Image (tube, rainbow, N blue to C red; front, side, top):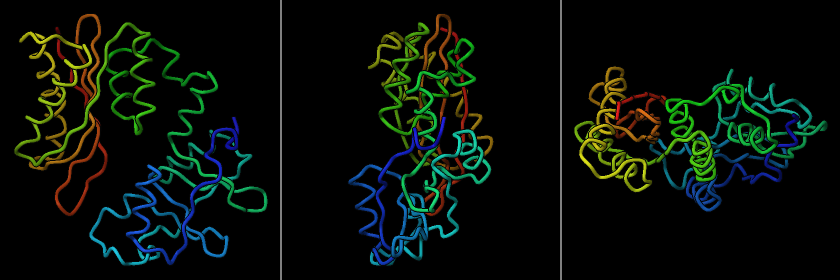
Length: 261
């Protein structure tokens, strides 16, 4: 599979003289996470929503916040090469150029996953029967509503029930918030009924996953996406997101918890 087959064509671009406030509006209106920055038609930077999360002046120029060391890929390169570049450089997306180094698209990690799905190809992990733990992982790591719905439907094919939710709180309230939001989502999606035994199973699975996270970052709150998947005998919960505090977000982390029904 080639990059040109799965990339987003005609990417939205901005100029270096645009303000932070203007860039934030473009990201929000278009519901995207990154913008290609150009100067006289030449790619000079990448601006992501993460670049704007730290303290900044809304009237400041994006030239002060964008990443200037831009990694690009050719439209006729393979998806395998793109995946390696994204992984090796720990980035979520990159501009796509043609043979004349002209911008023709943008490629993200989500595009790669969706490209394989769209073309009916299987990811290596999908060649095996997906268990509730792996299904919860895939669901928790989705980054758009489209992929959430894709995985919610997909796991039904394996005879599972799934739900997903998001929550964030300070360190004191986070354990409770995680249990509450996951339980509510599980009931709303029909993953569990409202009896105490099944609610306790979800709560125990969340507790199991949270303990793993807290061992790494004790005393910190954060924002997380939580997926719960019910198999025939047990429930699996996956928690994915970031610990942090008012000024700094930590790296993304994933933990898994299970509980017998």
